[in-house]
Amino acid sequence: MTMEDSYFEPETIKRLKAGETVPSYHVKNKGELVHEFNIGTAAMHAEHQKGNGDDDGARRALGGRSDKP
Image (cartoon, rainbow, N blue to C red; front, side, top):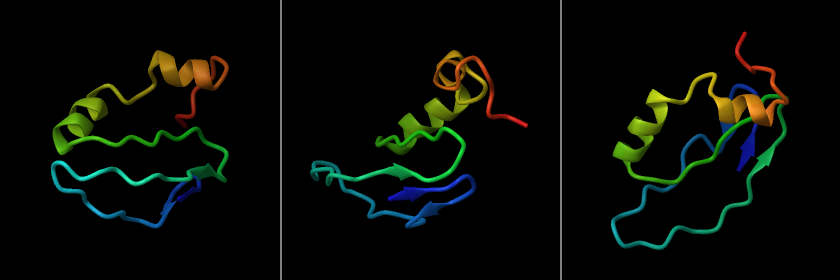
């Protein structure tokens, strides 16, 4: 999987069914922005998005800067 600043390749990955093993992924960030790669249920992603803004973790990863315009 390749991550650029405004897109990912491939755009989608196979949706797993409950109990299926998550395949291994090689994730490469070729952009300038910090990205996250999370695997979870739809509910987990929805909960994560509530706090996925200019949070402390993002600031630490960016040396105190923000990747928000």
